[in-house]
Image 1 (cartoon, rainbow, N blue to C red):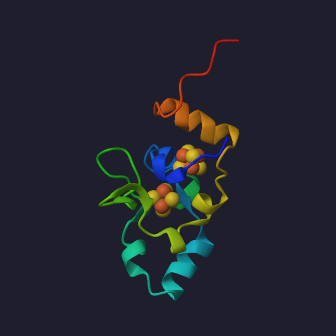
Image 2 (image 1 turned 30 degrees about the vertical axis):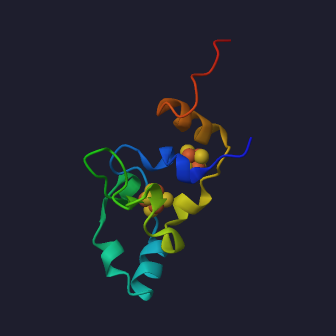
Length: 107
Ligand code: SF4
Ligand code: SF4
């Protein structure tokens, strides 16, 4: 099944402090002059930084006008976001949790 991330965005809705931004990303953002991204981070789990969440429980960079599930910093997005695999078990779980896919059939 082909999954369209732009119609989904479920993995960008998480508990605060859990979409981690490792040190290497901080260096990369700094090097690219992206202080605007650095300003939208907060201390997260495991003594790492994380993307801030908005009032909807979603990453502050999630969505733009006309594309509600587009990442505003897609080219620069963090390693955690890059490594998250569309179609993985966790992806499918997030999709079901947000009602994008129907609940899993009971076993
Ligand atoms: S939950 Fe899966 S399909 Fe949805 S945006 Fe994330 S990776 Fe893409
Ligand atoms: S940086 Fe982009 S892909 Fe990563 S959680 Fe935020 S909106 Fe989603």
